[in-house]
Image (cartoon, rainbow, N blue to C red; front, side, top):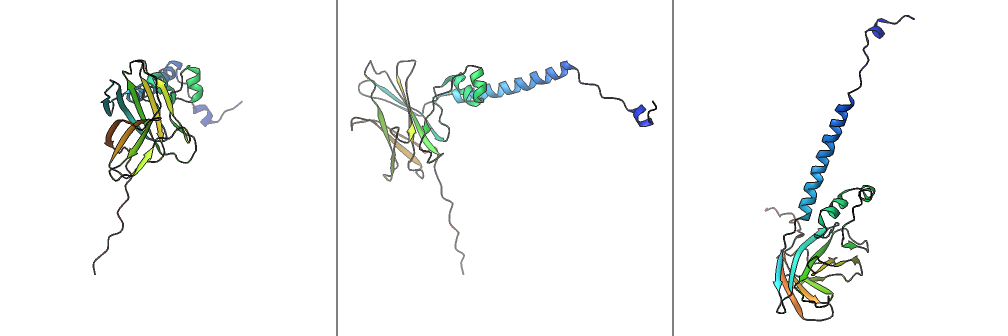
Length: 213
């Protein structure tokens, strides 16, 4: 059977050696793994914001304030932080547990606040629920939700202390600083007070300026 000149001159492309594709896959996998490890390392970093020691020796620490729609516990650890970054089926295949999170359950907003507070050196005292009043310098205020419109986090630390992750759906968003007053839920005595910068301060753009005659 005769072939045309073009068919005779055509040289078929040879497939890439298998080893070359394996090398590319290993490099891509290594880049992804390094990126995930860096993200997990940053997420696991836990510098606290403020701390007070009560007269009975209890140490109350404001560990973190988070805003937005993702509120993962700062005590989740690298494995659980990694699970939050992976698709659910991949995390399940790797047998990674999902981290504890404060969730907004009323579906009224995707931008809320969570306060992460620990109580340590409690000397065996029973754990009592706490609530936090969030105010500004003009007496505008909000308060932590009591699991009505959010799912809070409550647990025990490896040190024997207590952890609370509390949702806040409304707070003085325009304030430059916030005052966080920590109370026992069953009492009116103030346990601790912290003054911190507002992590999600809302600003209103200036209105149009008037022009002179």
